[in-house]
Structures are given as structure tokens and as C-alpha cells.
Length: 603
Ligand SMILES: Nc1ncnc2c1ncn2[C@@H]1O[C@H](COP(=O)(O)OP(=O)(O)OP(=O)(O)O)[C@@H](O)[C@H]1O
Image (tube, rainbow, N blue to C red; front, side):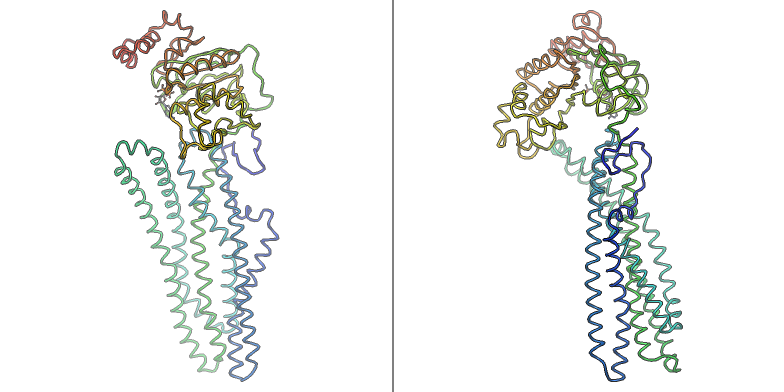
């Protein structure tokens, strides 16, 4: 049913949970590089292991009085070699980590954009954005630490212990016994941290979500002087995040002191035990010194391993959030193209037909038993009180959502039978908010088109909606970026959105209250434009103005989620009291009649 859009597993159209295998991601196509990094890390580790041994040898040489220079040079070479190999391995690994995060961000953005509208809204913009910031950073730590650093610190740890055992196994047993309790305590802490990290990342996502939503509503917040209340609410959320983070920090802070304590206990025990063994003639002083150096060296890989494991816990919690995102079902632009699904309109079929359609966002149906028809050509107006379900009808035609019952047909085929991209390719849509992109005028007009549109065509479309002069007056004309210093008024935005729809050759144009912010002159222009489009295509317009409705070839009257009447204006004036009331309310504009219409006074 689904064909991947790219070679990367981006769209999970089946909705099945998808695991994110970090190591597989890292290793794919980079085995040689990783082998190189492993080699460098082994060199660095070996050098670290050899260093105390060379110190022991140097001491021996001092005791015996000769060969100092050799051992000194060897120590310098080993130290330098370790530092260079370490730096190179760290850089190369970090580069791989950044590349993985880059791919993951790309995939997250593509998946987020591919989500169904309702799923995306439920998830929330801020929460989705956190995947690109905090979660991505936490995940990178797995790459920095997981494949090389952690195994290497374990190798160093085991290697150090083996050498210590070779030097004096009795002292090694004393050391291990002293460290055992410390390691046990730290292991429990590291495991418990995982839960803390999950909570922190979820709360950071929620905080970002609320902050983004607040910033989007800034105009209203300022107008209502609600800055303080809203800031206080956000501060409360930030405090909850901080509390959680402080709890995690308290646990993290235990790791280093507990290991240090273990080391100090081990040191005392080893000095006592070692002293006794030297006095008994069972241990040489140079061996004892080398053992002590290895004991000091033991803490570094141990701490690295323990704090590495706690960082990995944070990374794993972030991985879970990415997995949760990828498990959200994407719309799948090919969905509905099963088998020999039709891709051409049925000749003579209406543009849209609803048959006993029921739809609910939650429990209560918003549309109930809706039957309606939009002819294949001409202007169809949909009217009704606010909240009667008009925008929902358009949403079902676009397949932003699917009905729970009944059938939605577009050009003779079930809407769900069309491949989604084919269906939407046949529709031009102007949403209620006349949403524009934070992009140039040109890109706003041509969004979604693969073939460039000539400037003359763009200017003609702008001229048709009376916007040509205003746009050419902008500093960069068609290439002016909207939304920053150059924003448009509500009516201008509406006209730009209409120009975009008029440029499309889609056989069905859906307009959701396109004239709500237009003045009389521009409304007249809109009517001309719609007439022009409606000559050989279908236009379904949600209308609040009688001028548009009176002009329509076909009118659908909605009330409380149902279609109460359909027909021509003149006929409806006689047969539909609801319609007549709406028309009189708007046409005469008297407060009583408008109020009656709005409250359904005489229904
Ligand atoms: N995303 C949503 N989630 C939940 N309920 C919704 C959503 N969108 C709309 N509704 C509800 O569905 C009902 C119909 O809304 P719809 O936007 O279709 O009405 P409308 O006739 O277009 O209204 P208006 O003329 O005010 O734009 C309303 O009661 C509304 O509260």
C-alpha cells in the first residue's frame, strides 16, 4: 500500500512502531572509518595502559643507575601518541554523531510534515520541534560515548585490572573488594536515572510546546495585557522541568564522589596490605609503585564507564521519543492507491458528493447524515451559522480527515480511493485563515508546483485580485519575503491566497470564507474571478456574504451538522425558512434580523 518517498525509511504509513537502531545507523556505509577510529582508540588505550609500566621501569632504572634517557623518551612518545590518537578518534566520532543527528533531524521534519493534520496538532508544534533540539543533542551523546568511548573505557578497566593482577594478585583482590560497594551503588543510580531522563525530556517538550503556542498568540496576549499571567504559567512549567532536572543532578552528583570514596578506601587497604607484603619480602618497591599508579588510573575509566552509562540513559530516553514520533502514522501520499485504483475522474460525475456522512472530532458528531452534491462546473455556495460544519465539509473533501460513516465522493470516486497526492492535485484550497508561508511572494504563489511559473502569469493572477500594484511596490517585488518586516494585511493575505488558487488549474476550487476581510471593490473582483474559474471548473465556497450566495449556481444550506436544503437561491428563498432568514439577516443587516439568524431564533 505504501511506496517510500525516498530511500530513507521516512513514512511509516502502516503506523507500526518503528525501532531506531542507532548503532546500525552509525555503522551503515562507514565500516572502514569506524575500524580506523577503533584502531586509534586501541592505540590510545594501549598507551594509557603502558604508561605506568614505563614509570615502574624508569624507577627500576633509577634504582639500578642507568638507561634513564630511553625510558624517558618512551614515556614521552607513549604520552603524545595517546593524546593524538585520542583527539583524532574523538573528532572523527563526533563527526559521525553530527551526521547522524543531521539525518535524524531531516527524517523527523519530513515525518512531522507527513503526519495527518489532526495527529500533528495533537502532538503540538513545540513538542515536535524539541525532537530537533534537546532530543537530538541527547541522542548524539550515544554516538559520542556508545560505540567507542564506553567499550574502550571498559577495555582500559579490564586491561588495568589484568596488569594489576599480574603485578600482585593479592593487592588486586584487596582493591576489588574495596571498590565493589561503590560500583554497586553507582549502578543502581545509573539505572534509576533513566526514568528521570524520560520525565525531563517529556516536560521540556511540553514546555516548548506551550511557549511556541504562546508566542503564536502574542498579539492577543498583549492586547489583553496577559503577559504577566501567561509568563507566570510558563514559569510554573519551567519550574517543574527544573525540579525534575535538579532531582536527576542530585543522583548524577553521587557518581564521582562514590567512586572516589571507593578509590580512597582501596588506597588505604592497598598501602596497608602492600606495606606488609614489602616488609615480608613478597613485593618489590618498584612493583608496588607501579601497582599504585594503576590503582590511580583505575578511577578514570571507571568514572568514564559509569557517567557514560548515565549519559547513554539520557540518549536512550531521547531515542524513545524519536521512536514515538516515527510510530505516529503518516498520511502516506500514496495511501488509497490500492491495486487498480481509479485515477481519472468519472465522466459526468459531480465534483463532490456526500452520502450519509457522519463525522465527529470527539464523541459528538459534527456532521450527521450529510448528503450533498457539488456540480462539476459553476459556483456552489455553502451557507450556515457559525459552527454548523462548513469547514469540516471542506476538510473531508481534502481528506484532512476521514468520515466515520457514509461516503465522500470526489469526481465519481470515493475520496479514499484516490491516491492522496492525486486527489489533492485536483483541488485548490484557500483556508479560512488564508495561511501564508514565511517566504517570498513568489513561493507563496507557486508552493507545491514543480514547474516554475512565468512572472507575467504571477502578476496577472495578482492583478485579478487587485494586488499587483501593492506587491510591485514592495522592495523586492515578487521576491519580497513575507512575515518579517513586510507583512500583509488580512485582506491582502486573503487576496494573495486567492491568487494562488486562481493560478492552479485544479478542476475543483475550495474557498473557505474567502471574502471575510475584503472591501466591496475587492469582493467584486473576487466575484469576477470566481465566475471566470467556475466557467469550466467547480468552485465550492463557504460564504457569509449574501452577494456571493445570490450569485451562486447552487446553494447548500447547513444547520447543526446537517444539510437542511440545497438548490438555487430563488427556490431556496421560498422553500427554506432557514435560508430566507440568513439572507434577510445579512441583506438587510438589521440587528434584530441578524441576531435572529445567528441564534436560530425562528428555527
Ligand atoms: N479541530 C477540531 N477539533 C475539535 N472540534 C472541532 C475542530 N474543528 C472544528 N470543530 C468543531 O466542529 C464544529 C464545526 O466546525 P466548523 O469549523 O466545521 O464549522 P463552520 O460552519 O465552518 O464554522 P464557521 O462558520 O464559524 O467557520 C464546531 O462545533 C467546532 O467546535
